[in-house]
Image (cartoon, rainbow, N blue to C red):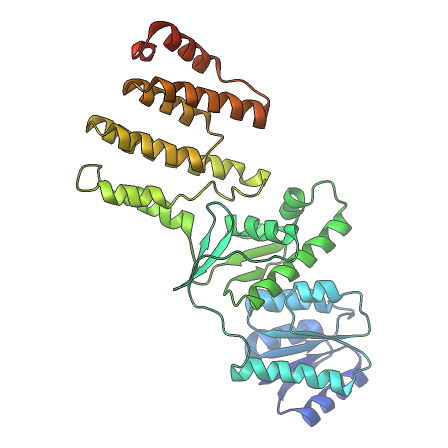
Length: 379
């Protein structure tokens, strides 16, 4: 394993080089007192590991590490410093280790062992491909195993992961993250909490052997799936490629409809997800109405009712579904079911939203009660 060492203090630089040579077979291909000169050499030689100080006059070790990881994301970073106040930021950068001066032989030996483990492949191996479920609660699915939730260290770490997942493959600036996830928190405190959450996510993904990477950019982060697939992408592609609905293609359409297991991140009250949540819900309900229309045209009324009842279980707060069911039950002459659906709707709105049914629904129901079966649908 090749290494480059950077420290503006010559004695510290020499001591580190001697200890590494004495304790390991690491090949030191360069020692530098100037971070800027070191960066040019690092980008050219692409070493496997860089040991660097943090407090340096030309450029801080934190800034240098960000530049290195932006161009060489798989390079291991080991910070060696007198100060422990940078630990959170160092681990937020996914550094391999954080050593305090003066160096302790046993502590350096542990770092070397960790480096050796990554070189020999004894470090945890991640699954090459898996599926991320965003419909309903966030879950991860490996081949041959049922989807499972991750027990995140904090709710904020989970929300940050979900936000980066929504913006997967695109850089997200730190100020955007702070504005969306830490509104009202002062900058310094917010940045500290952001760094901590990034660190927690990376450690959790590593512990779960999930091969997803959060890359450091100069002004933010980017989540890279590394071959993983997302259920909403699969669903939308199948919707876009679905053939015209007829008797022979009905099973394919039903299978596509079944992939919608619940609202996008529906188990969490993320305000920033509401627009995407609404968009996906509208697509699904539109597809369901298309399927129900097919069943009605085919005189398969019970199948149409069954389809809407499934939607109602998934989207219990969707007022339009109750109204659709009232129309269907009226069409097939099930008056008690019409009354039952109106009662369910009124109860749901009163309990969950402190509201009453829309005036259009109320007028329809009152007309239906006065005029008898089938007549109210003339509105």
